[in-house]
Length: 472
Image (cartoon, rainbow, N blue to C red; front, side, top):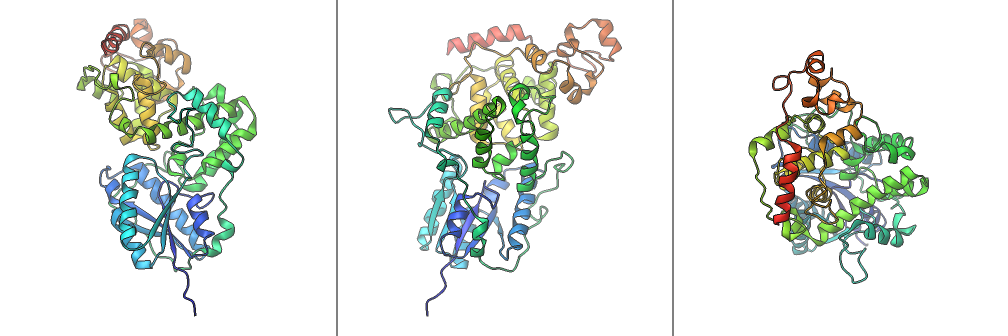
């Protein structure tokens, strides 16, 4: 009498969904019983503050997936500990023949997976990974010489040429759920048991899980055609707000791109380009993992930044005296999110107005952004600092007042996050230090008291930044 086939563990990481998952689909089709698992990895969690929106988002999402699987007679096994230990231990306990996972391209994740693979091999368990996070990964898109693309436009052209219907085909899972191993549900650790406190996630209106992603995506589809005209205006509901869901994989990139390609509007085309930028930065990180700590362009690795900690702290706290910069930083500090146009403005201001190393800002964003993604965050900061691939030329320096006038013309965004300037109208709202004294008095604004004087002079700092880069 033949024995039952051994189970396959499907290790969920930044692919927190049950639909259109490459690893889950392959496991379900294998003929083996399937046991999904998630590890609250202490190697990651121990580095985080005890109230972290990302942890609460993940915890709520994992709970939703677990409930979904329970409805089909299966379960999501949830562990708390180092994934380096928990995955091999669980595989041994359950007699698994293999562990399946979707690939992660961050250097630390690659090292983790290599370690887990070796530990599993030592006990006779296989480890297989699959492409899922992007449409084209690693070196699937290369130059004619077989090298990495370091400029976005030719990469985008090559990406589009390589695209096929097969590349966007979803990985069907639910029709195969009969292959889920039947298990009585077991409780998962609470947020408190993980050592974390609840945050303001619900108050901010951030709905976790695939259901939250679906709601946002459905809303965005009603606005996507206008995306090209609205995406740069932070006071307007113009972007998709799906970045946190893309980061944690609660919605499939193939699904998003299929809709963008099928829409055939200028707005959808602009949004597709942004999704391709995400893949561009992903392949940069895979080819050049050294960019995590170093400039993509070696000649800019040791720029002579002044790194004034007082100026840096004013930037962090939204006290620079430049309203658009302050509003953006306060949005980040109070919500864990920052509009993409504002990420460019604040990054340029930190590096080229305050002459602070881009790595300081990159680290702060990594700590505070709920949608933090290493490849995109690093790529964006190096773009603004002119140290990266296909970067903003160093002599093009954002003027924060001009950016404010162009992208928040009525000051609506500034009014929301810098309430001490709420009584000040455009155009004075963009540069209060240039406003007439009577106008400031009528608005209840006292520079140096209720609102900061500019901490630097943009024109002077621009010249200093140009000199700094020229020396390099």
